[in-house]
Length: 209
Image 1 (cartoon, helix red, strand yellow):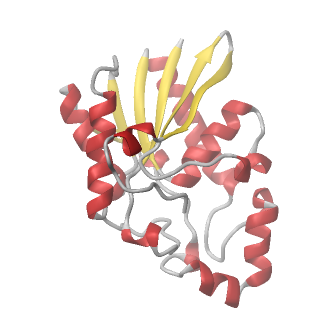
Image 2 (cartoon, one colour; image 1 turned 60 degrees about the vertical axis):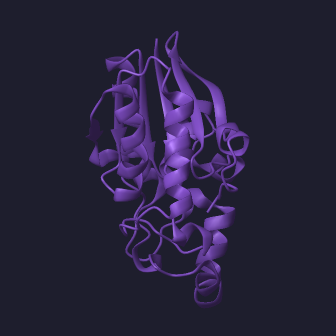
């Protein structure tokens, strides 16, 4: 049995402003740094053997407090990087809706068919991220990965068996913790979008954008 804690990075200013991030290396906001601290606080007693992160700083800086609390190093895994949104990166949601309404509607209604201009598809994200999760679950009893909204959702959809069509039926807030477990040749999802540690300790509201 291998358990993987799927952690979404902390908040950035672009999350609050509803700006598409993708591969843009946007730093954590002050609130995001606090979320990272609270993630470390709530998970520091778990028997986590390794902490993996997307190469982008918002993920690495979320992973670092947890790794330090556990006496571990953050291991960067390129397969956990955010989905490329191509032309949309740096655009506010309202601009996308205004300038590319049909493509934006496709993103909301049929995400499995979507690709931003110059960007990735969910199938391409799955092709790199899901094998990474499978591999890490086999390597460790318990490990943590810190990644991005799209990657976390894709992982959860795969574990649930819904595929990309279920993308919008799963919510993953900034600073949230979800858990998937390899069990009996299949996958069990034991937690989705757990943010109790953020609310109970006085952090700001998490963001699902």
